[in-house]
Length: 258
Image (tube, rainbow, N blue to C red; front, side, top):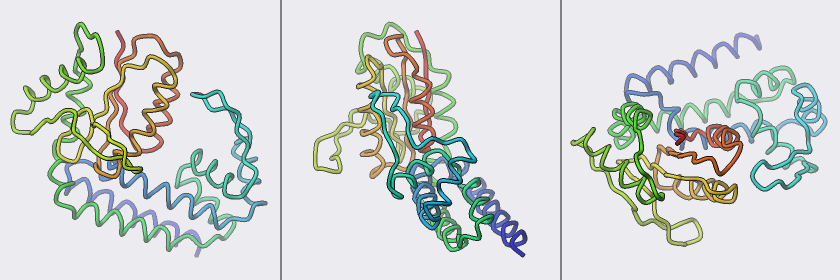
């Protein structure tokens, strides 16, 4: 019976994914809002496990409660249940957490239903449908973009805007759009196309990259689709790790090297 329930949930999950593809042009899971919601569901599901069960899951998956932050070099330790839930939510996929929920007989179907309802709501939003029809084409164009004689980020933003306007004359490509952060501070989104925000970075230090994570979090309250364009000039080592970290949060990252 447990297996049949799980298969039913997977079937239901797949149905909405296919519907999203048909309606929006690309799967709704490219939406940053969706990934934020999925992470919320992962945390909620893990919070239903006991501390002993969380410890067993970490041991079985080879996840340490002690780790080093790549950007700051700071050592972290997950001691409380809340900290352990956050650590596992960051390292495990929803599919993996569901498997453990089944194994430990943890109630979770209500959370999957909540995620399905949220996905359906995103599909029905007209603004998402309108921009998503161009989403994959814009990403492909950014992958093909070749920067020339770049001196700083502002010049890179200008080049990308000119390039995208030429590629998509029917779309409104705005640059340096003024916004307010969660604490009321003034922000500027580098490039905005409908419900898509493109943040441009030429990393000069790890601190520079660390600020990017905070910026993306602020932009998420305004835009459904978040893209980071990183031009690697060789000043920061291990950029691939920050790329992995961003992509785990549902952010599309495009990297170029010169």
